[in-house]
Length: 218
Image 1 (cartoon, rainbow, N blue to C red):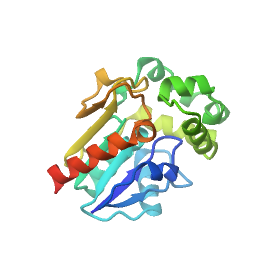
Image 2: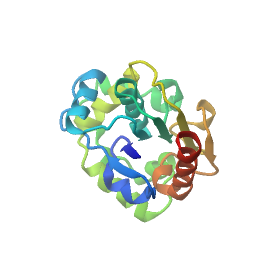
Image 3: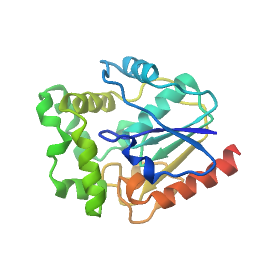
Image 4: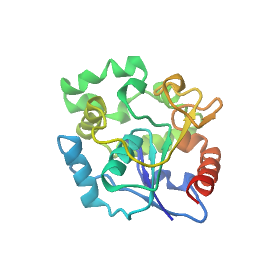
């Protein structure tokens, strides 16, 4: 069975070593160079860049979960896994949600993730170790401000499209400060974990994924 991972905003397949899922064929999607102006264009560009096999599982990390759900609504999926992710803009912490309109006003230079202070990354993403923080920064270096701004615009617009008709597993950190757990539907809450559980708490995430696939999708 194939699992396609959709990494979060500013992330990429550098996260692959954290998600070893024996018995499954894991693929990490590649983000297109051109994002387009709308969700329809964005999804079309992703499909040009990546081949998706019918009857597969889509796993979305943070923003990648929105993309996975939208993709599943168009291509179909056997199951969807949301890792520290969400389905609507109302799930985002209010202080971050209130800043989203800036993405339609400010120039791209203001949206370089690489310039976000480490103390804020630690606080909002729940990253505890220096190695994990360095990896996060390395991934952020690859995403320019224009693309970051465009992705924030997509989030603000909401994930259009029909709700996906597939079982969904939702894994979340109990101390997620970007997507507060009280605003989420959650199947597994990882106690004390922050937003970036794909990296910081991957053993628990992987164990739950394997258990769910065997039980629900067998």
